[in-house]
Image (cartoon, rainbow, N blue to C red; front, side, top):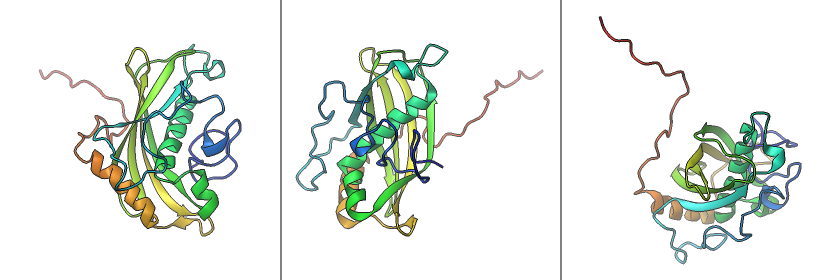
Length: 216
């Protein structure tokens, strides 16, 4: 597996590594929020007991489709969906203090173990996109979360991404529990999202769906 997306230098899967064309926290220099401001109004990092996480998917990220992301089919190439979901993951990691600053301080990070992307409707050059985040589950080492990508002005669902990430010691290259302060931040989000319905397609498998043949 590779670090979430893009051309990266090491294997494993952490959203906060440096990539070609990327800057602090793994965010593409071109993939900036449309208005240049955080999409949500929560403190970064989250302060348990002080910050009220809404009982709704978080507005976590925004991006605009660039010319170099368009493929020969005339729409956004599939690889750049993954890039933008990667950057959206960085926004959540910043919120719980699992971003690049944490990696530099502790030499711990998060590896994405599995991801499932669905492509619901095309997006094109210069389209503005917004991303929502829902925390599905968590334990002492793992996060299970889900993104939806919407067209920012037409509001249709363009894509989804379901992921599982693992907290890792980069020296030992093995999993370790989240530190207590980080686990408290995770639990704040998890508690706020506990009452949300499970998104359609969570845990889905891939395959060709065939209509049942009529019985004779």
